[in-house]
Image 1 (cartoon, rainbow, N blue to C red):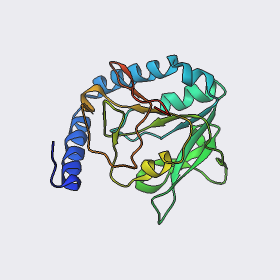
Image 2: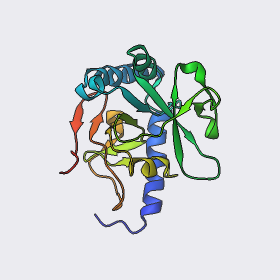
Image 3: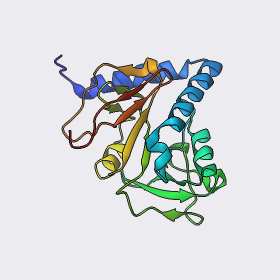
Image 4: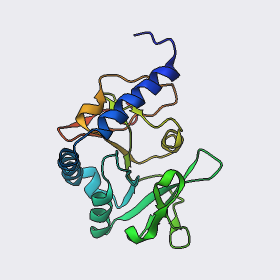
Length: 198
């Protein structure tokens, strides 16, 4: 499929998947969130890895609050991102509880720097990656700012995309430097996408 204007095409896809999420019934969304949550807890990669990286969910995203609480309760080292003002870079900080979060850029909850220790080692870990949409190869459609694209280019751990099944496409446009997640988790299925070195 030839796409003349990738930028405009991605913009229209973002609008499409935002609308799907914004018009989703609260009870249905809650059920799908719970299904994704349970699937993640069964993963061998989740169980064995002590370093747990995740985004802090907004209203239209797959909920990660239960994941954060479960990982903390399991004794994992939980790290969440902070967008660095004036850049398109993210830093991750370890949190001890949800009390270590406060509204930051874009109204998203971010770590309170005075309370949290900055992550310096990205050579391993289990990372939950957000996306408005994913495709069957593990490529993602984000919000267009590129924060996670930059982060994933240097992250060496295991990456998991979480997404509602009705927001998964067969194929999304992606560039040479885009990095697919290794596993896609939806409310209906798990899909292994790509292994490092393959």
